[in-house]
Length: 107
Image 1 (cartoon, rainbow, N blue to C red):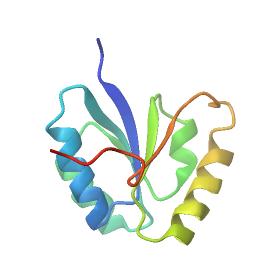
Image 2 (cartoon, rainbow, N blue to C red):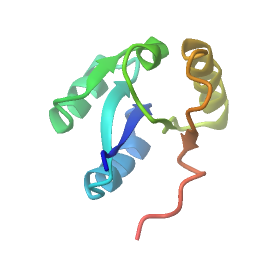
Image 3 (cartoon, rainbow, N blue to C red):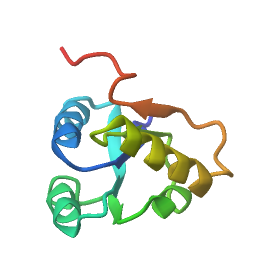
């Protein structure tokens, strides 16, 4: 079975936690990285060199993925990113939306 392909939106401290969780799980991989900060994208690409990176959520409609994980810090920011991401992938209606709060805690 191929790994779950994840696009990670928001590349700050929360994302660092989820990158570690995903790296430790052979059933998951990160294929996309989204953050407006070029420095954050470069740091994340150093950890996930095969992933594609973008400053905006238009990346969601450009690469094949199974899930989008929103790791932005505030509820308002998450809501804004989610709305933008949903618009960016209207042709992708069956994909699950993951948020840091919807995933089970790491063991």
